Structures are given as C-alpha cells and as structure tokens.
Image (cartoon, rainbow, N blue to C red; front, side, top):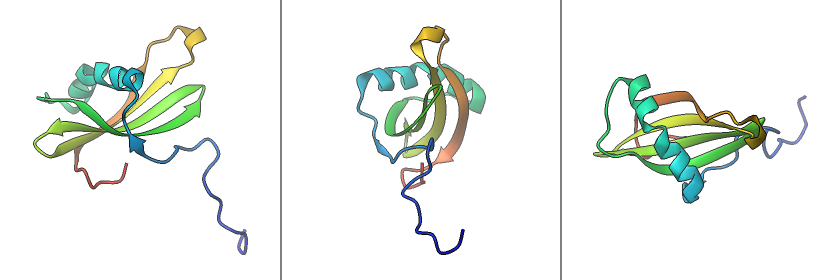
Length: 104
C-alpha cells in the first residue's frame, strides 16, 4: 500500500550478513565442499566460509559467501533440517564467479 512506512525486514526472510564464525555452522558448510564442486563442475584449493546470512524455516537455511582462493568467492545456500527429522543437510544452490564485494 502506498503511504505505508517501509518495513524493517521480511518475516521469514534472510537476516543481515555477519561473519561466519560459529564453528558448527562453519563445519557444516565446509562439509558441503564436494557437492558445491560437483554442482559448479570445478575444484577449489580452499573453501573457507566468510560471510553468512540465516533464515529460519522448517530448519535453517544458510546463505554463505565462501572464499575459494585467489580473490574468488562462491555463494552457497544450504538447508539444515530440524534435528528430529534426522535428515542430512542439503545444498540448495551454488553460484560461482563472485567477489568479496558482491552482495550476499
């Protein structure tokens, strides 16, 4: 509706970006390296989660900027289902050709 004040964020949307510092989340994302390499048909010398955004759904979606070396980055989205489902994490998407300055 026009005239309404803008909202702060979309309910259920991704939160703001922050450093990928949580060891559990970093380990989860690092474990996805072979799937990301397969999806992008390449291999990476390094795979270091850099920046992270989260979205709580039926589990958690992690949108992460990953440093793959030589100033190159990939953006990955991984879904971690709720623990009671006993389902493994799943790669939802991967985009190569990113830089540090690209929006996540």
